[in-house]
Length: 105
Image (cartoon, rainbow, N blue to C red; front, top):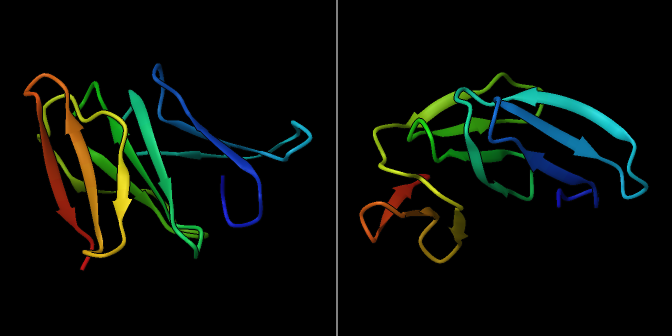
């Protein structure tokens, strides 16, 4: 969910990031850099981080900005979470049975 209470959804088959109102109305469609979305983390300012399990990258979409690739070559970058103590994303690499850490500093 984003800071406004809307629901954001990533797609495995394409790079679309869809934001719906709580009532289910499509509010906007954004594009991650890579298709194969598996995880999404939304920051308090509305910035979205999207992992691509198929293509191994992390896209960042800032409010009113186009997507940019901030990390790549991450094997099977699955669902992600935000570690606020260390200002980093934690990325499970399912094919490697390990975790990756991406600093946001």
